Image (cartoon, rainbow, N blue to C red; front, side, top):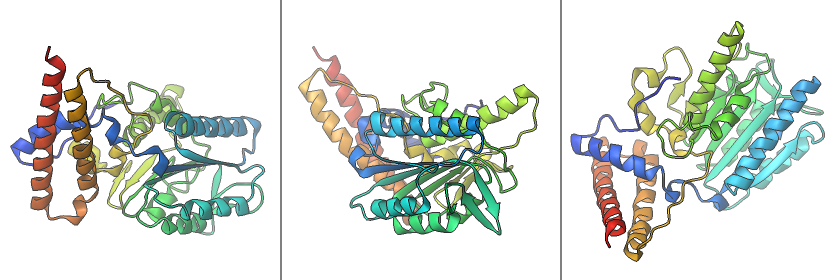
Length: 335
C-alpha cells in the first residue's frame, strides 16, 4: 500500500509547516480529537442477501459495525435489518435522527445489494426499495451536521455525485452504476479499523480516510492475487470539493491534500489515553484540550476564511499547542 506523507498544510509558511508536523502527531493521539460520543449517531442498515452467503456477509459486517460504534466508540446506534424491517421503518428512523438535538456527527452504513433502475439508485430491502431521493432528503434534513455515508453496495458510485456537499463525506464501494457485483469493500473496511497497517500517520487511531485508502488497496490486491478482473473501484467524495478514486486522484498528485479533508478528521477507533503523573502536566493537558478543539474548529471553517487569515490563526494556535506540549513533557520529567 502506498505510504503518503504525514498530514501537513503545504501552502503554509515555514514556521507553520514545522509546527504542523510536530503538533498534528500530538493532536491525533489525544482524546480531544475525537467527537464526543453523546453527539455522534450511527445508523446501520443491512439489506437483502439474495444468496445465503451474501446474507451472512451483510449481517456479519453490519454486526461488526454496530459493535465498533456502540461498544468501542460509545455512540448511539440504530440497527435496521432490511430482511424484516420495511421502508417505513427506515424512514421513521430517519425522522427520529433528524429531530435529535445537538448532533455533531451522523454515520450511515448501507450494507447489502443495490440496483440502478430508471436513473435511480435503489437499496434492496423487503418490500419497496430505499431510493437515492429518500436518502438525499434525509441527509438534507440534517442541515450542517457532519455526515459520513458509507455505501457498501453494488452500483453505489452514483451516490457520490448525487449526495456530495459541504460537511459530508460519501464513500462508495463502486465507481459507477455499472459495477453491479456484490462488493468486498466492507470486509476490508472493517479490517482497517483494527489494523496498524491502516494507521499510516501512526496516531494510534484509524481515520475514515485511512480506512478508505487501506480498503481501496486491499480490494485491488485481492483481485490481482485471484487473477480476476477488478469489478469494484471505491470512491470517496469529501466536503463537496475533493474526489478520491478517479484516475486523476488528488492524493497521488499532491499528498498534502490530506490536511484539508474532512475524512482525515473523522475516526473509526477510540483515541489513546494518557495518564499524567504530575498535577502540573494534568493542568496543561486540560489547556491543550481547548487548543486542540480550536484547531479542529478552525480547520472545519477553512473554506469560509481568507487564506491569510486562516494560516495566521492556525500558526498562532499551533505555537500555543507546541508550547503546551513542551510544558507537559517538562512537567512529566521533573523530579
